Length: 84
Image (cartoon, rainbow, N blue to C red):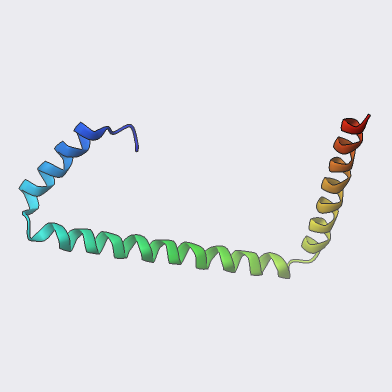
């Protein structure tokens, strides 16, 4: 995890315990968990909005269909080379 080993994490948690105290750490952890959850939800909302915008742009659907057909042809080529 980011190049941090167990000893480094223990030192970081020890310093955090000394700075914030035992009563404040659960509150900080809870707030951090809520922030991460909110961030993930916001990120997924943005991704969903981006997908809907792409559907509205003319030609995107056709390009996706052509891309799928090209991929199918490539796969057929691989199968033919394996069978030979």
